[in-house]
Image (cartoon, rainbow, N blue to C red; front, side, top):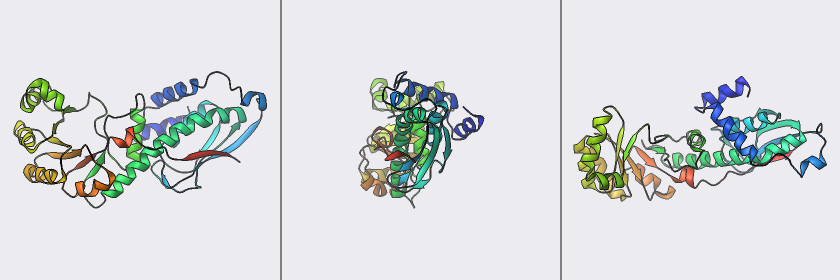
Length: 285
């Protein structure tokens, strides 16, 4: 990987070596030979092509696709930057190199680019829906194994913000923790005793649980599957003493109504676990 591309990945908050490892794993899935292209094209045949958007949206994953091309010896030039709004027919990335290599790179590059751009596009729709409120759109840990860093990066490209990256960087007391520990208060106290400065969020299903979480000292409360009216009441009850995150049962149509209650975040697992791929194609020129 060139230092320039490595630096761009690093600036995006991605681990260049982890991205390269992922790309190598993806390329290896296609096997050692290409029984379609190798009989047709000589090793020194060359071709050029453009990765082109076939719909309007937000792009993410350009440098990741470039890693695919670079590892296979294909020259490349980005025409847009991650996070840009793009329109149907717009060229996102141009490539030139050995025909066999470009054809081998095509599907892996598109799989990553289309998936990440789909997440960014979906995230931007939610961000636009709550524009003008203080609420921000947050992702979850509902990610595909091995793709968490990239999927959460795509959320950022779409204007969203990341929740915790894993179980190691922030505590989230959920219903099963409460059931096993006996109460929110007991679970919160146990974590705070071991980690005095750790960010702790408490999932609450009812307003009574919100009161208990506040009394325990929670600085962040997740309002799980609450009605919009109950969320508004929770905002009044908390009165700025903790950040509030709406979660569960949220839809894009409902997003603005939830945001105007005064919550700080809307948590949307569908950004990563259900995002539709963004339509991009490679067209030889």
